[in-house]
Image (cartoon, rainbow, N blue to C red; front, side, top):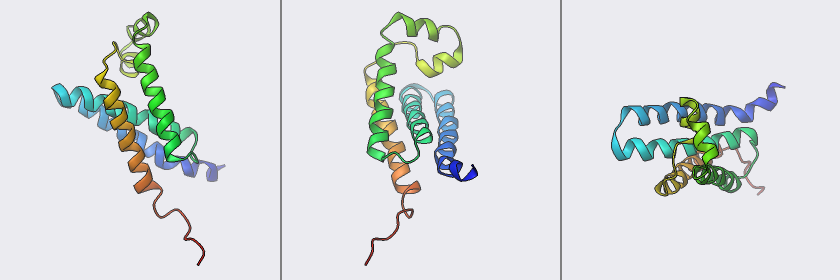
Length: 133
């Protein structure tokens, strides 16, 4: 059983680091950096959740899925249901947001791309066997 958890260690750790960094950005900075840095960190967190749930997923596929989830949540902010849900608790507001903002779509793409790059270069490099000679 422990062997199954090992591939999830890296995305779990990256998710915790991303969560803490996102909260620090959101509440420690002001203005543009706070707003869009927090949005990008949220999307990166979605990426780490996708990889945690499916550790063997290809980086390209995890990028597409995380970006689709992030954009779907943003577009759902145009509906009254998500606005109502976000009004119920601060944690739900942090997860789902409060209103649609098209520049968030760009910040989501940046956050997911950064997380995918970290996964590709830090967690995957050195894990592939050398090709046979």
